[in-house]
Image 1 (cartoon, helix red, strand yellow):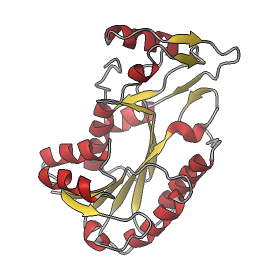
Image 2 (cartoon, rainbow, N blue to C red):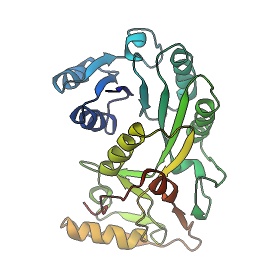
Image 3 (tube, one colour):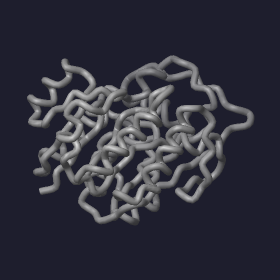
Length: 259
């Protein structure tokens, strides 16, 4: 069975690791916290405490796998340098393919239907770094890579309805571009099982109602007070498409995004 390493066992990485274990994979998982290490060990994950600013301790053993999933969030100043340093280590490892969890924020304020062919339009420094990392990985000939551009993440303990209840929703006439943790995990696992490489995929649920309709429905379902909606006179109507991903992996989204 394929050995997989997950760099960053946080909100996405940890449940992904648990699912891969259930499926019979051997999983190496990293954390930056000694306290978090016990959680990984108790779950059956081979745990590594790694310093993201100094990839030295135990890194060779961590990278002794065939597949690497990078799920660490971008860091304000040195995210690109962190990944560049990691790439130099990957080149001399047994890793055959890397999956990098990017973000649809690379499209910035671009309007209309967004596909993987849409030109990136990063508007913040951290997002510029993400776009540069994508190219560093895709252009490297020492290993294969896939880029997954995630929509807004929701799931257990991370549903925006709790945060937005009774709050003002700006630009409530714009569309949602969200994805549930359940679908993220299922798709990454399917991608690992596939032979697909050197591709970019948008990972966004195909359900794109207006924010006002969506969050009102969510709050009603969760018995929460409704948010206060404020429309934008010049809304950025953006719909990110995952059709390429669904076709490539023969995937049907599982979660309806309400809960």
